[in-house]
Image (cartoon, rainbow, N blue to C red; front, side):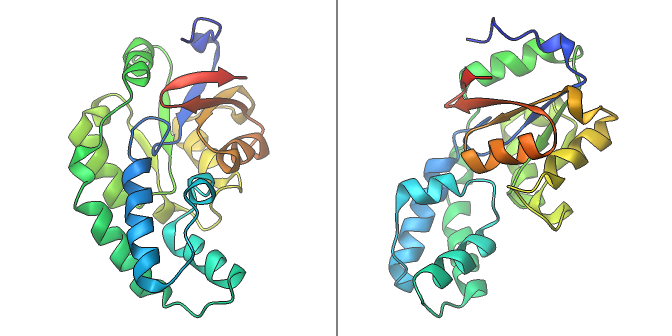
Length: 198
């Protein structure tokens, strides 16, 4: 899968979480679909998937404006989160990513930069055992400017003491890849745990 990458040459490896390290995106999207139906918001699964990395409340506001709808963002967010949390314990790590993380553990510093809340991210990391391998987490709660802004990934690099120009970002969405590039980092597209491009 990843033989063309010499991971040890990097100061740090920085991972997005949902859809990159773990298979949680379908659960997020299912919760989105149900909540959108309840609130009368048009739902487009592919579009929502591309918004991965942006916190729910920001996405709701963007979509409501796009469709000219007056939606209670807080109520929508609470409902979507509640539906997602009903299934959060089903989340698992993509096997290829587990292999990569275990192989690089102790050799290259690793961190996570996610658009999820700190509480949900910590729950997944603890539940999957990733917390024992990846010590640094920057969540939606830790910064103001979310992806596609570079702040999430720059914060991870700072906490790891890494030079951003020598970090490799793993992402599953164009918005995430954009954030990595904006941070001056190398990026790689990771879909279902498989790496596809530099």
